[in-house]
Length: 282
Image (cartoon, rainbow, N blue to C red):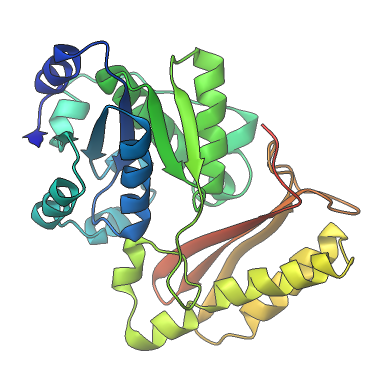
């Protein structure tokens, strides 16, 4: 496995075998089973697999959140080596954003609701760094998790709009046995907060149960989730949503196809989760 910090070395490795297919998994490190499931999917579908590990400063809204984000590069590389990854790019900040950097990717309507409303500028940072990763790696396929549902929708839009020559592959959420969606942020939860964090999954399951029983009015689904969250003393609600899975606009009336999503603070840690009900079309 090649581990490198430079654009030049990534491109050299990528172009050694230009006829081979490459799968790319962009990450911010502190890898868990969710990331590794993406690696295995990419390994099964491509000749070569590349992983980026970069805590992207321009997608953070708060400096304390950036500083607290866990970093475990040595451990991450050992996990990726075990999974048969071919190339890891773990660049310093000035390799991604060199002095004088001034180019950013800014999508419009699709970034405004949900995470975009709570974290202004977040998706400008995400889209910019992912566009750069696509340009450096030139992957055949890029793999992302459904847990970041709006991110997946934003990046699909960017790929279409800018005609990137790759396939976007969105993989299912990987959960702990008790239902908590896997996230690097879970490491920051204290023991009582870890238990309280299960409220996100309970809220989604409660809304799903209502939907399955035919009570599909979007406002009712939002209220159901909100009530479950507010009953947990350690939880502080940021938002709940029942939106169109593609446009991400909030639905009114019956929600036959719906993305249920939420962001919740458990103590100081902000967690997100979602269900897609009724299928999702591209």
